[in-house]
Amino acid sequence: MLVREVMSSPAVTMSASANLQAVAAAMLDTDVGSVIVTPDGDGGDAVGRGTTGIITESDVLRAARATGRPLAAIDATAAASAPLVTISPDRTVRMAVDEMIEEEIKRLIVVDGFDIVGVVTLTDIALSYSEIRSEAVALAERTAADWDQ
Image 1 (tube, rainbow, N blue to C red):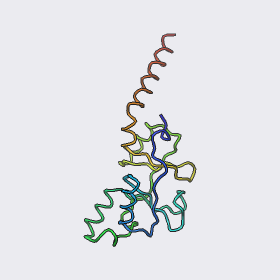
Image 2 (cartoon, rainbow, N blue to C red):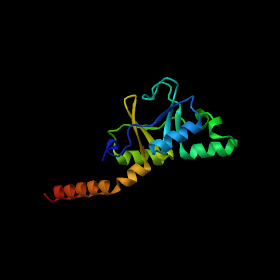
Image 3 (cartoon, helix red, strand yellow):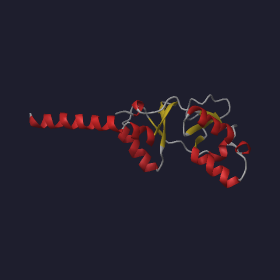
Image 4 (cartoon, helix red, strand yellow):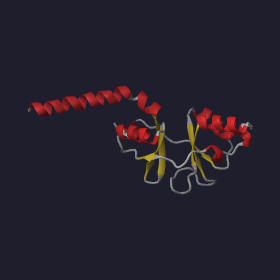
């Protein structure tokens, strides 16, 4: 199974000039657990043109706790994690899992060339588990049939 089949798309982006109140509102409004922070005026569709990082729900909570300030008083860039870890939509889900394990993260930014096309999370992968398992069983059966010939 390929990343493009399980990823969430499009990715939610916010301007680097946003505050964490706006970031939290965007997460709630779009029912996502992270946003990609892009430079002002970038349009939020490309990696390599100054994309700042990613902010997760946990990042918002940590920043609020660490500063003791209201979310509206905390810049998005203060909570963003960087650099972005990316994967191609044509990579396998197994490759995505391996990358997440290696980098000790729960999300990968899906890029096609330099364009951000989505986000794949451990949750996306877990929700697709039965399909992935069925695909693996079918492959095993085909391989076994090849050995029998």
